[in-house]
Length: 53
Image: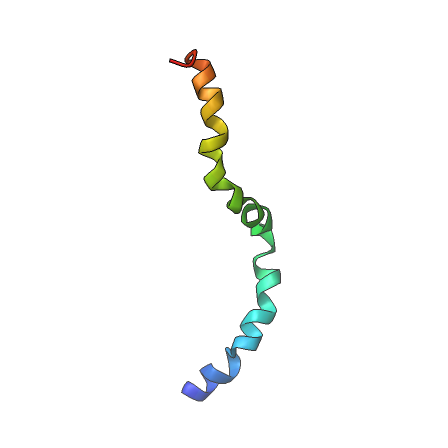
């Protein structure tokens, strides 16, 4: 039983299927590094909307 698992799910086969399996999430993964910058970019707009109190 263990031999069947190790032969069919080797790391090389999992890595080989990853690009096709996760192709739909590429746009999301490409924009994720920008996410922490959003509060810094939105802060001036927020302050301008409340007249820089």
